[in-house]
Amino acid sequence: MPKFKIFIDSTGDLPKELRDEYDIDYCPMVVTVDEKEVVASLDYDQGYSLKAFYDVMRQGRRIFTSQVPDHVFVEKFTEALDKGEDVLYIGCSSALSASVLAAEKVAVTLREEFPKRKLVVFDSKIACLGQGLMAVFASRLRKEGKSLDEVVAWLEENMFKFNQFATVESLSYLKRAGRVSATSAFFGNIFGVKPILISDRKGQNLAVEKVKGTKPSLLYLAKAIVEAAEDTEGKDIFIGHADNLAGAEFVQSEIAKLAPKAKTYIGPIGPIVGASTGPGTIGVFVFGKEVTLGGE
Image (cartoon, rainbow, N blue to C red; front, side):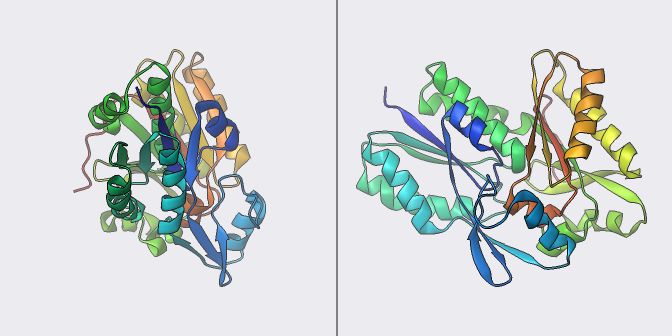
């Protein structure tokens, strides 16, 4: 059975230790700061540290993001195909990025060049550590000996069981970036209210609740993700933060009270997602109940 390589992109937010552990590579996107293009590194080692990156936004300077360049897909996919490996790219929700579309265009050409290999472009319908967690599950299935086709079939059946709950300091970043549905925008106009955002079945960020105050919003995240997880024994819960480690650790401590047997992981939100959500964002992610909201 041919081996297959798993790729995410700069919205998948898996840090190096998890990418190494699960043998997952990523196709980097690009951010532009003060007219200077920089690789959107998940390790914050390409021009900006984690704090420096979010300080740019705190200073009111705009950060622009770009999808994965075609040549990056070509280079990354070809390297694997040349080794006799098939390719699975788990991309950012197509509702948030054009990278899935770009990858599929590249894949059409590469499939002709490598007719004996398989190259699957999978639209995760989610981003951030939800997308990353999906890749981790794919890696575990691969380790169990599942074929590429079997893994893709599992993803198609279970993709909407990857849950996201997130809160932001301000919806202004998401609205400006066009990353939140218009029906959610009114939440940002209520002073002191923190919106709770999920990733819906269309792959959009949908505000489903409004909570007064920062601490109550973090308590909400902890409770909501534990409820979404259903059985929490040994369950992975990923917590992402945009230069807000204290907030992430508070959520982690609250999750521990509610689900002491769950396994929590804290990591930074990468520069692409962070540029859209803004500093201070906290997100929690778990595989559990099926998401039913469609963003209508």
